[in-house]
Image 1 (tube, one colour):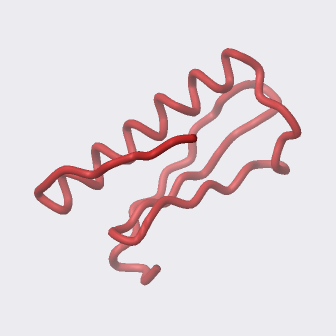
Image 2 (image 1 turned 120 degrees about the horizontal axis):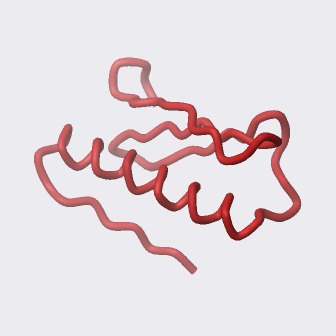
Length: 72
């Protein structure tokens, strides 16, 4: 990802955990702070999904079209 094409924002999920999400036309990258968790609580997962949605919406606006998320 080149610097000019990346949109990055950090979201606080709980007192113990934050995630920095970076989106570009080639995908999304999550960097967990302080470290990747073994497991997310229900609340953390809910906040993560909301944050991811915010970033994908920003990407869609930037691209001027729709983006698709496929989750397994």
